Length: 85
Image (cartoon, rainbow, N blue to C red):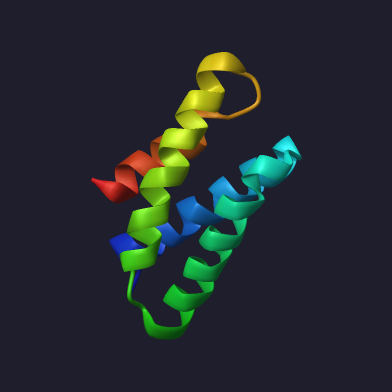
């Protein structure tokens, strides 16, 4: 069965890919935290880390999108918003 938490995991995976494409060293921390939370969720199905860092990633991506609209797709932000609400 596909749960809301599974959608959140996928949205966080998209966020990781978006941060990696930006190739900026300041995003290494959020990438590693998201990757850890994704792995943790895959292991124990507890989405608490995904929720915490999903919100942080969403806010960061929104800020990047304000300055550089073409660097972050709306779909990624929408996926995070839908899975976090």
